Length: 56
Image 1 (spheres, rainbow, N blue to C red):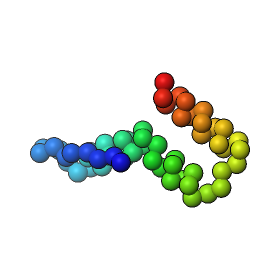
Image 2 (image 1 turned 90 degrees about the vertical axis):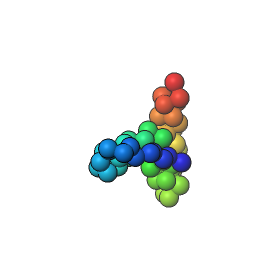
Image 3 (image 1 turned 180 degrees about the vertical axis):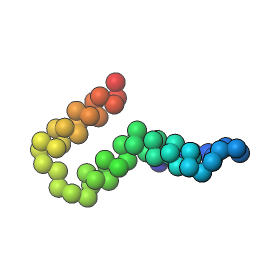
Image 4 (image 1 turned 180 degrees about the horizontal axis):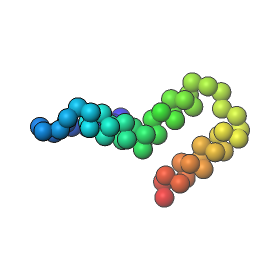
């Protein structure tokens, strides 16, 4: 789960941008997409390659 703390002088727009960036780095959107639809063997292979790159 991703969460951020908004600074006292920070605008809401920059906080939303930071949150979106953190969510995309964590791979949450990809995980939701994977769970919603059937995944072909090739898609599974590509997903695992991306995960390996992230874990380096």
